[in-house]
Image (cartoon, rainbow, N blue to C red; front, side, top):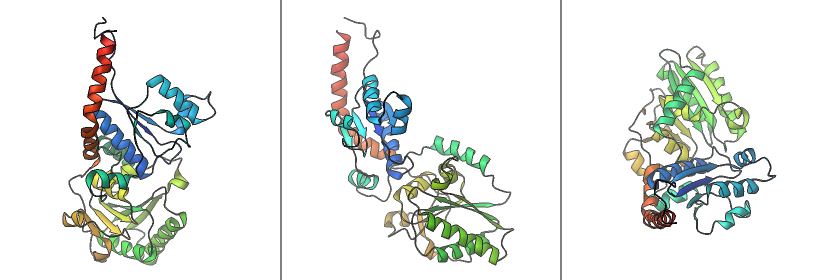
Amino acid sequence: MKNAHDTELKRPAVMVYIGDDDPTRGDSHGFKGIGRALARKLGASFHYLEDKTLLSLYPQFQTAAGGLARYIDEHGKPDVLFSRASSRDNPVLSTLRDTLKISAINESFALQMMGSAALVAHHLTPDLLEEEGRAFRAAHPVQKDETLVAVLLAQASQLNAFADKLVSKCAAQGKTAIFVCACWRTREEEFDKLTARLEQMIAARGLGAQLRVKTYHPARDGDAHNPYAGLLDAADHVVLAGASHSMMSEALAAGKAVITYSAGPADPGLKEKGLTLNFNDCAADKRFEAGRVAPIDVTAEIAERIAQKIRPGLEARYQYLNNLQNFS
């Protein structure tokens, strides 16, 4: 019989494998956030993998499938796998027959677990927001007495009217930096239209000394550090242009109420709690009405609901495996 301390006890494993999907998209962030939270709740190891990571770790393989197979050989099969990849994308996935596979997109999964898709899971934590906030302030310092307005651009229509009213509100606010941040699915023509109109209206109204515009689009600035998380932490006000459950959820997790424009029907619960405000209901000649709120994050709650369903089976399985190991 081996002493229990002679051999490391086996424990569950949670893996997030996004394959060649965009790591900045909401589904990727949601999987990463839930996976990490679930691993903590289960006392499990956590593994986050992208195809480019596997090809870097195992350059001897020509494909990510070979790298994933080797990684699993070295670390063991996961008990829970979050991935939108199929066995056609990576044949190794077909060998994980005893693994709980979760592939639903973020909104569908939130609806299934929480009964609502108004808020979804993400990867942001208070520590990460604080760290990214420091990096953002160092790279994009805000001037004295300047308000920072984050404009999160998904996909929106009537951008000229939006830009005109935004400039008016910023002028009423006082000295303001407008930071337009696009996401992976923001069309570049929409991004260009909005930023050009903002600059045009600022110049036409002689507001150049009061208002300034900064921008980030991952398709153009991908080599630079992505300022998104840091912007959420640093911003005084957040405006969401277009529909994005992920951006909405991440802004609220950062403790910022969200002013929405062209974002689809508002969730009544969020609006009643003062967490969202329709941009069209805001006065053009008044300062921003929405600011900081108590942070809201459903990621941990979703992870706990998964843990409650699978914890009993995993505990029994690993107790059995560790008993076998101790008496071998």
